[in-house]
Length: 444
Image (cartoon, rainbow, N blue to C red; front, side):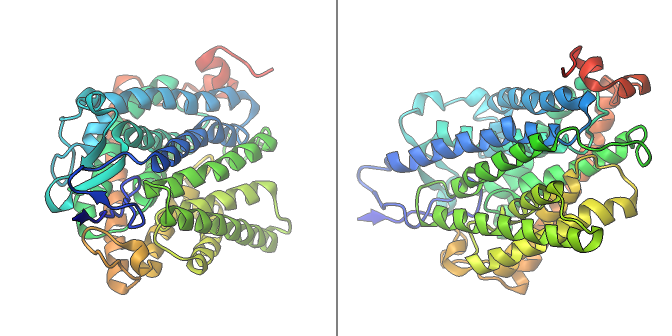
């Protein structure tokens, strides 16, 4: 007798129907091919933050803040690694209830003892048997927990104290990221139970980070000289290299979220590439039509917009819908980074909300429109979910819930951080630059 694999609709939780059936008598086995792919994907996603995001953001700030901006991504990588290992992982993937995991995996309890065995997430009918060891699963998830708060730093570039960055990110990872990851990707999570589809992080990563970035930008206020000083990027070549690393790393982000090396991973890789290309072109042509010239900054921003929008849909849609998602994302990202920001008057320095927030919302909603049958199979819907008005409403509910929780929670945590260490550097420190005032170093 053979037991069929179950499939979950979440980043890193998908156990593909294409995976080998598991012998009931012998129990689940580690699959070396799946494990090799997940090890590779984990490294690719880590590369997205360091060096990818670090270079992408550093190339877009002024020279006096280049080192400080790169330091933010690097420090967050180290900081979240420790926080995730101590408490973040258990809050996200401990059994718990519908809203947060329990403390059964505090300090990664139980992981070391089962280092050479596959593991099961959830219990009862929702239980999922993996063909990779838990060490790989939790490290893959760790890289997502790392890049999400790192994305937020683009919204408050040039003005947050480093001590505030440390305090805020510890609190935000524990109290915002981990619960939202549990809602969406754990079988016990309430958004998972709702039937919302988020393959690789449209809600958990991009909407969550984008909205948090918006609240940070508003709470900290505008940069000194915003609107009249020259704030041109220091070195767009660095930003292009960073964007290129993000593009390549995104295959680990999306195709790796299949949880195995199979057909769904292949489709996720294909649609990721298509959406990124389409969004790059739509942003460029929108910029060309409105400003007279297609810019390098526009090209790399468009690519990221497409990658963001396809993220929640990547394991659930076919190539033509991916093309449509990319085209819409390029236009939406261009609007979010230009018209929306200027209309509302906030200073989202590097367009964390304009790209990640806006395009994350676009991707999450369009997933409900274009989800394709068997590709979107879940434990709740073994035959898969096809795009429909009902699924669109479910996606809308999940999107609104994460938007509201991230906005309110981020604002509260910023106020707590302000009381503890203060949020913003002094005006004279901001004028001199964060490289010198926060780290005592200067770019040659």
